[in-house]
Every structure is written in structure tokens, then in C-alpha cells.
Image (cartoon, rainbow over all chains, first blue to last red; front, side, top):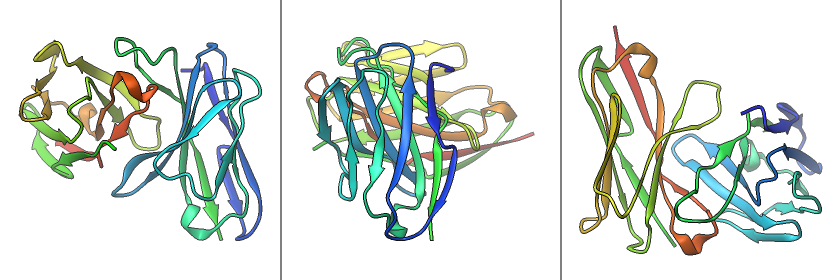
Length: 115
Length: 113
């Protein structure tokens, strides 16, 4: 579990500000994911990446931007934060998309509050 | 896209009792079904998973069953202990989804000593 980290762990920002959440993994996993966790909704996928420079939208991508220039990093940017983006954000990674090895390992999460 | 429904949303049991959490999925192409446990303030962690080529899998006190015809799968915890108290999430995925998981809404399990 120490192989995937997120920063910051806690962030308070104001409406309209840009915020970037960082995710770093040391396993050289190909796949990386960003989820948000809200009460009553479980974990919802925001964006995912199959490899460096390959990203695609998940279930709730609006208001978010991602990039992946290096395999180990997958930052998530809120271009203009809104109160509805107050949530706990989890980054995850997996070694392969193979149906026979799909375990995703989660980072410790970032609790974001937008005032 | 895939939709996963999870029930119940909360479950309270006495220590030593069994607990069952059920999930249904909508995409018949889904073939991988993991269960994650999330303790308060912690990250989700995989506890057990099942692929579509098997109907049941056990690991000590936990087991998962899969009914592909009915498109539902269940988590069974026997001889529950207070440390089993957590939020449990089911999820579904298939080989063409690039590893993406669709999660259920979660079940808060409380085990009373």
C-alpha cells in the first residue's frame, strides 16, 4: 500500500479556484484511476488512464482535467472548483486490464472542501 | 454503461452471526466482481473477488457467490467479529472496460460485541 500516495491529504479551497490533486505510484502500473466518494454514491470514476499520454473519461468527468506525462504520476485538476466538488478523492492503480488480474490498489485519499 | 445496485445500505448484526450483502449488475458482459472493505477514514482494500468462470469462492470466514443468469453476486461473512465493522463495496468490470470498476453504493456493516 505504501506504493501509491496522494497529496495533499486535506485541502480547503474557495469556489472558483484551481486545485490540483496529486497521485504517485511506485509499482509502474499501467492503469490509473481517479474516483470521488460521496455518501450514498459509493465510489464514482472521474477519469482513468491506460498508460502515459492515454486518458479517458469516466462516469463523472465534468469540471475535472487529468494528464499523465509519466507512468507514475496522475494528477487531477479542478479548473474552477465548485461546492459540489467537495468530496473525498481516491486515486487507484492496477497492473493490467486483464480480466484475470484486475485488482486495484487505492491511495489514502484526499479530503477536499470547497467553500 | 454498467450499473451496480447494492443492498442493504446498512446492516447490524451481533458478534458471531452471519452477514450477507447482495449486489446486482446490469451488463451481462461483466466478468469480474471484487469486494472492497473500507474502514473509517481509510482507503478501500480488496478482500475477495470472483471471476465469471466460477460460482463460489471462499477465503476463511468470507465467501462470494455469483449467479450469472440472474446477474447478482453476494458477500457472505460468517462468525462476524467487531473488526469486521466497516463499509463494504461491491463492484463489477469486464475485459473490454480497461480495468474500470463500477461500484455499488456501499453497505455499512456494524458488528455489536
